[in-house]
Each structure stands twice: as structure tokens, then as C-alpha cells.
Length: 318
Image (tube, rainbow, N blue to C red):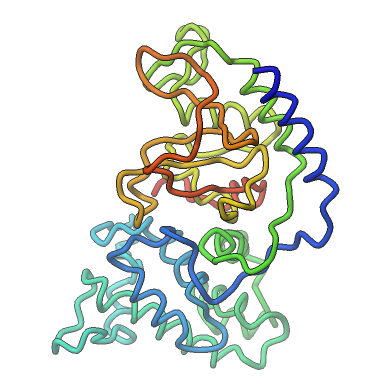
């Protein structure tokens, strides 16, 4: 244990001095970030126009529905892309060419979302500011309001919508350069280390009535709360709290995830905090204690470098 803890400090100090660690979104998708059933659709239609990208379209769909093709909002927005029926009647397209425009069918709804985005981008192309931001604002508030405001209008819902999706975009994009280390990682690791030896409790959040015990995502959530970052409660939602470093780019503090389906982040079932040297701190299962475990197992899914903006962007329910 002493060796691993020493390794954590050494690796983290080196990571904090890395230069050129700028996140760069690509037009590719991060591994497993988009459920396999929708990946080809998002990759294809996310390249429909320059203002859109696969990662941006994925972030928008995740924000709208959490990939749920049957969800209905209180405003009667329907399906995976959350179209209002009146908007669908005008802008829905037959994406799969089967002769029907079905608001509930992702094969129609995802192409329709991309088509509508790109149509809005044309409407606001001469508006000052970033065309993708203005496109998203138009999707939320209408193109007329964006044009009249000369950019993203001063509507809190719309501004939050744009900011959340642009932050989530980093979680869905395949990074093409090194990802910045975060200042909060050391604090999260310190909390997790202080809980070594604590018995596991399914659903545990570390509260006094639970004897200070945790399950896997309860531990990671509590660790990052100590450094001012609020994560969702469930592991598969925590995956979208930032960009995804590759295995050889892992740094202490990254969340590492495990799944029986390596094509779909929604199937993630376990999470731990990477500490360096191929090890994590995790709360593994009933009957075990919080401990160091190796990450290089057949069910290793991937990792997330948690960022404050990424965590704030996550929908409260997905």
C-alpha cells in the first residue's frame, strides 16, 4: 500500500507539470460513449453540416433524452430527440427511407435532429458569435430570438442549454491531443485513500446511518464532492463527466469504468478512482472492503477525466 500511495503522489506531481495538455474535440466519437444501436446514425448524420459534429449531436441527444427513445417531457416533447409534435410535422424526415416519418423511431428522429440543426444553422449563419452556439440556441429558443438578440439570447434556459451541450461535447468526442490534468484529482484520491478498509454497502453514500459505508459510485461521488464537484449517483452517468483518456494516458484521479458490454456506456456497472501503476481504489462488492484493485481486466471499459464543467453539464435525470 505504501508503494502505491507513493506512486500516486509522484505520478500526480508529474502530471501537474505537463505542458500542451489541451483537450481537442475531433469529428470522431469516444469509445462506447454512444450506445452501439445509435453510433452509426450519430456518426453519419453528425457530419451533415459544418456547424454540427458527431460529438455535438451525441451531446444534444443525451441532453434531450439520455438515449431513451420512448421518453415524453412535460411539454409533450417526444422520443430520443425530444421533438414537439408540431415541430416534427414540419421538420421530421424519413431518415431510414421506409416511407414513414416516425417521431418515436431513432432511425428517423436522429436524422431529423441533425437536419433541423443544420437548417437552423443556415438561418443564423450571419448572426455574430459562434455558429454552433447560435444553432443550439435556435433549437432551444427559436431562430427568430437568436437573430433578434444578435447571438445566444439572454434567456437562462437557453444559455444553460448551450453551455451544457458544448461541455458534454467533450465527453462524446474522441480526443486527438493530450487531455489536461485537473487540480481536483489529488483531493478526490485523498478522500478515497482515507476510506480504505471500509466495508462495502450496496447503495451506500457514506452517511452516518449507513455506518460510513459506500458502494462503488457512492465512493466516487463522495470523493469528488470533497473538491467541489457534484457527480451523478450512478456509475454509467458519471462516465459523461468529462473527456476520456486512453489507457496509456491515465492519470491519478481519473474515474475508471467496467462493463459486460464494451460498446455501450449505459451498460457500465462498476467505477473506481485510478491511483497510478495500473491500480484503482474502489468499493468492489458486498462482503469486500474499499481497497486497491488492478484495472487491467477483461471488463475494463474506459476512463473519464472529471471536470467541473463536465459534471455541471450532466442532465439531472437520464
